Image 1: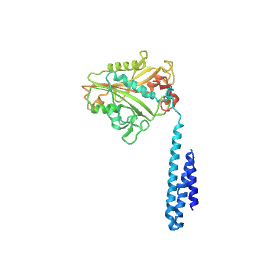
Image 2 (image 1 turned 90 degrees about the vertical axis):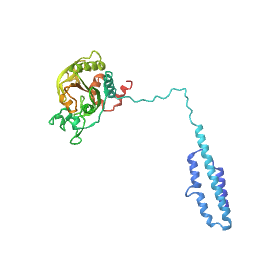
Image 3 (image 1 turned 30 degrees about the horizontal axis):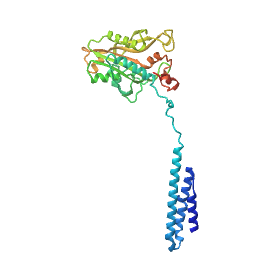
Image 4 (image 1 turned 120 degrees about the vertical axis):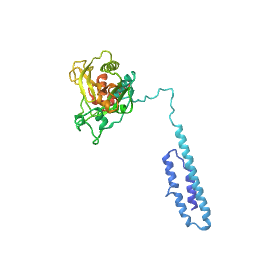
Amino acid sequence: MAENLNHYNNEIRNFHTDKTDELDQFRLKFLGKKGILIQLFEKIKDIPPEERKNYGKDINILKSMVLEKVSFLKNQIESSGDNNIETVDLSQPANYISLGSRHPLSIVSKQICDVFKKIGYTIAEGPDIEDDWHNFGALNFSPEHPARDMQDTFFIDKDILLRTHTSPVQVRIMEKHQPPLHVVCPGRVFRNEAITARSHCIFHQIELLCIDKNISFADMRQTLDFFVKEIFGEERKIRLRPSYFPFTEPSAEMDISCDICNGKGCNICKNTGWVEILGCGMVDPNVLTFVGIDPSVYSGFAVGMGVERITQQLYKTKDIRLFFENDLRFLQQFESI
């Protein structure tokens, strides 16, 4: 038995390695659950009683030697690894890290909001999920209006839906605040439409609301002239066409000359040379009455525009679906903006 202990003693003393896996094997060989030290402790019952004390002492010495050897070699391997770490030359240029960029719709939306902030408008936002009253009822939509149909609107419940425009934000502002009001309402809206190069079931709107005393159609026209010149430049032509919206009277739609085809006709302008970018009109007196504003004292106008169509015109993008496909080849073109 003493010969075995001497053998293990010499093995421990003579063991050297610079590899972590070999050190682990050595440790498990002696200290594992089925290791040599466990086996030696189990044989203590076979040792004569008068020799057991010295035998147990020798085994504990052997165990201490293993622990010391493992600790020593582990520190040696770790310190050797630190010395082999490649030094960094701080004088060399750093590796280029590709940074993200704002989405083109976010860029244009901010540009539009900034234009109106210049003339005293403030930003107001509201929930994507709306109730029927704020989305339709308070905006003078009749109960039989086709927009209330499931074919045009995503209904979650009987009276809960995904908003079809950002006009409900205007209603909420008018309910909580008294005129004068000058607000810009950006946001995402949803309509049950086919996805094509010109339309999508998800898109972004920015709406404008101005309520004050003695506001006229001329004030709205001047505001829109200022907006178009700021966004598209002095040379861009506009035209207003009579239209109908339940919440404005009179109502109009505004077109701008198509910059993609320079008025020659393309799929975006339906070969007319003009692109509709917004609807507008004087706020209907019924809407003011619904929210507790006296239409005999106050008047105002509302404007609603699609961010995607304006972005198409600014960046000459012919397919609206590109804004939603997250194609890096497309989005990386806007990194410098």
